[in-house]
Image: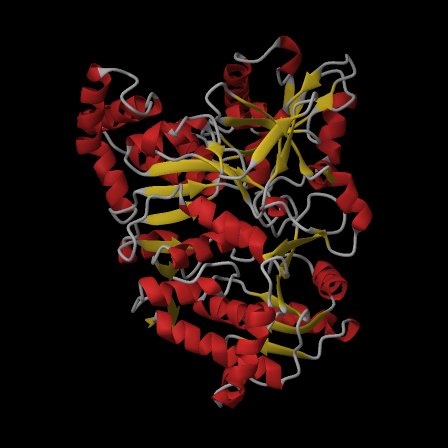
Length: 589
């Protein structure tokens, strides 16, 4: 068996070891269309031949912008990489200004887009770039289609040139530039080599118990992010059939339709799934409601490996049979494994999903680490709730005096593209300084406690870790999003986006109606009820950490609204600017 050392070796490995009839499945014109492993490779080779005929050379950069994950993205990815060029994926939801910056900074020569929405943003800035051509995956009138590249490569007379190009690609060569969605400043281009990503994929695969050639996955997290992209290579390595969700709104339908065994998720999605389940439980009456919330209570006390003793296990078995089996059925019935990353997972979610036999395994990583540094694994005692698991093979972590996590290993990036000074700031003696604060326990489990840059000091000189407070506050069903503030101020406070849907339902039961979100956030009864939630959350924190005041915001915090990055992280500076009047009201009256 040929060793996997470059990213385009993954499809070849699948063909040799576990060829699939349904390597990728996407919905087109209302019909689910499958692509086999052989078709995948054949089309990737056609793309390579077509790109060579278009004059694309090794180290040319190809921008790829897709609103949804789809089969074409993966074919194009391998086609680009095989000729020694680089795939530069771009988040579809960033601004036109950022499109222009990334395309120009990466020096992209060609661009492939998914649909009209993305095309419009590219066309708005195309004249200010050096793009030679833009192609679309969807059929759009007046726009070149990606199938033109496939057609250009249909004649395989230059396949030898493709094979020669592949042979020249070394594991240490640059494979992709991924621009961080950054919460401040211009995006930075993270340079990842074939070896960075291949090693990370192979070592991460050791932590995911997938039955080779038998498992099905649902993919919906943006493949432009290295997290989902590595998972995509991992699926190829493990012979997993990948079904691409139609959209975020249709995930529930697609889960029921395809009944996957595995998927990736971010905590925000798991929070929403859990909240919707609780909402259905709240609507029950009588004994059904009592049993439902008894089961939830059992789930929230879950611990792995029978740690709670035989009596708890008896109760858990009953809860699983009566309640949790229905939860699992609602998500397709076969979902055994959910890999969670990108942000901190509330321990209660890890407990309740694992109690329901949907194994949420939290991991940790960054774009700069390709991305996985550590991940939990239910097998062999390698799962501990409240941690991000044990380190991957060949990965070293040292904790600096200030608590910062520094990572050394084959997954650490080559550097930031065209920014050697910024690279030197974060990679010191081979260790990447993550900006995260954490600790490793006696058993080797890594725990993340906060972001170094997000910790702040009050005017009284006390340090506050906002993420810990935020995660506790978000356990309330009345609170959807929250940002703890107070740097240089006398006390911590919070800007809170209420859970509008839940509060409206709660209001009906209390005889309250709200004409708008603005009216809701100013309602005295609502403010009083949220205050009760804040007071309860404060109980587990020291006096100087407690949130003393809060203000409710009338908007739903979103990517489009500028509140969140494409990976659903808070843009703290922007959120503060948007609600500066509320902030000033807290501290200046």
